[in-house]
Image (cartoon, rainbow, N blue to C red; front, side, top):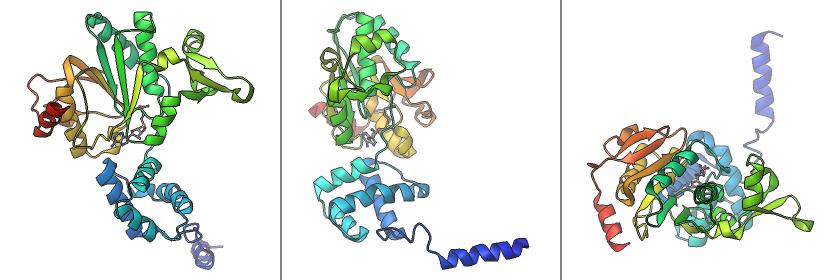
Length: 307
Ligand SMILES: C[S@@+](CC[C@H](N)C(=O)[O-])C[C@H]1O[C@@H](n2cnc3c(N)ncnc32)[C@H](O)[C@@H]1O
């Protein structure tokens, strides 16, 4: 068969049989996708590219089934009408929560060294602002316990995320055994309890470690962040990639006054803040500190004053 004939045959086949998209349970038009993109951008700052269309369909189709709806139009009307419960489920469905214990491990010795330098003269404070299911704040907690060699170190860790379902999992602190495979045998023994019986294959973070971490919902886009004080370190890793540069800059500007002098900002491996060189200077691989002469935003002054 000539290449032209093959192409024609393919076209005929395509015309004759519905595509996977056409076979879908719910109609999902370009207009529906545009409304989803607008809503998630406005609520969570997340910029969804066109390539995410199928993924978005899959995640939201579940919500339509749960609500017994038959069209995306009806679903979007509920969201746009201000149903807060559905708005929460919508955000939870569209966030990407990939994480692991000691992800990007080079950051943890840097954190330990930084805290050691502060010498435990005063209570230390760390904010993990996209904590997902808890592996990151618990890795910070393990680092701190190892550094001070006690389960009651002078450190508090605030773990926040926009997604309420991952926060709940973080609070529970129960993981499958394979999640802690790459930890040392000493760490596994010191920081986790093994499940047995119906919990075989699961591990639970020891309550002594759990006590060091407080989980709270916080949307980085919210105008008000209810912070009580400033931090020695902020972990903001692998979340900025979902935001456009303008949103990233606005958030970075709000971090500046929340960091104590010499405080460190830890970023994800693919996140660089060159566009915020007036706010932060690089201190190591994806580690930053605020510039003394960084401009402060009016929003920040307001939120800190009332925080
Ligand atoms: C890929 S995970 C990164 C988790 C962890 N920081 C790490 O590096 O392993 C991104 C997290 O950012 C959260 N997130 C997305 N948008 C957010 C927002 N506007 N405010 C707070 N958290 C957000 C998601 O819910 C998700 O749990």
